[in-house]
Image (cartoon, each protein chain N blue to C red):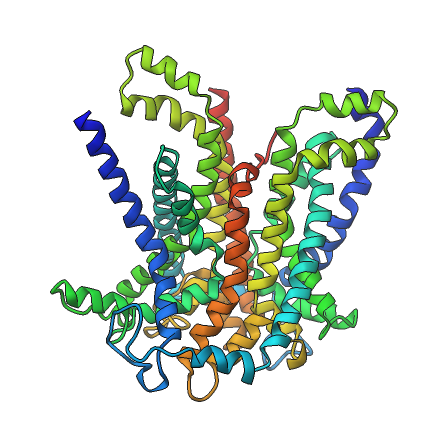
Length: 294
Length: 276
């Protein structure tokens, strides 16, 4: 144990105490409260006197005809978004990392979607997907293509939400990747060049392996944020339209809790979401550990 | 040489495509905000609409309590930023430098706080805040926002501290500094880029959030910008031009902050791994 560690170990508690207090108050207590409530019939009729009803909420939720469809859709939503976030983000970072006149301006413009408050972006995109007046269909018309009823059908509405969220999310990955690219020493590329590696080989053998450790935490965070992103799906499809087909798990929970006041049921649903995410992230981390061990 | 020129052309083409994708929706809001009241539904695509007017901006700035919303939002966002930076810089340091018991578990725990759907925490949060007499106070939302922003901020700070060699602090200790002095005088100044990001991120959390605010701030005198905007959007006759103008006014400060600080964004955003 180094000098610093031995002398300062006691300090750790003081450094962490304020954070712990805030997180306990705002996250841990409400979380435990919800877990408790997921075993009750807490709803509009039993708001003041919820009664214990065991696993009823859980049984009901898994018996729901829509459950597995929404579950699957949430995975698809997360997967598609992340693939595009990473490819567009890393792609943009590679482009911006070159000697390019006006690079600072381009970088600033590409960060715009991240800087905008999410609900404003979501509502703007919703407007752009409007059938008659939306910019997307107007441009399609100019190109001689027919108008698409984006928000009127299940899968086009899904696509609309995905496009919105890709737009929102790629700048974050881009910024992380740019930082990563700038920390790769030029000598590695030199060495690869001397070994006769072409641009593609240099990308796969130098750039990618060096970027991976930088991107991994960003991808974990991105997965959690996307999986639990209420704003985009909820606002773009206007609370699940058409006919409640446009839901991912969190929007479904939100509707159950705040439109139908089925709190106990929604609480059980949130616990399932939480456990699912916990599962995904631990699989990620196990994969990362195996990767390092190799 | 020919080949290099072609590469340049391709690179520019791709960058322009991406920029178009990123900036077009923003441009669209500008256009809508300039439309005169009788043309809100229009199939025009030109950037400056026919009969463009700044009337919507005038209405928002002078006929709505915009100043009040800005004041509330500034108080909330700046306080969130200060608390976020203070707590995250401390906690991140503990995670980066001290090998205490349950350190790994605590780091995981911070990640785990992000996994529960935040909206379901609202109701119990409201109940605690009411017990603490923090409903309808800006303090209440600031605490809630700080908790929202902290996990990401701690990760950022820890990741950045990890890249600073410990030798510097050890030297300070040998020179007679206390560990806390070593942290404040040596490590903190070196961490400026990460501190900037942490502040920016916390500020943004306060500036753009409205679900928590709607629950914790029923009193319209305490409404923040997003709540004010929402009231614009939900008035009987949806005032699209006003809403667009309001949105732009809300975006301008954060966008400017982002652009001014984008230099730090790239250098300061080293998310620490969960392990290590």
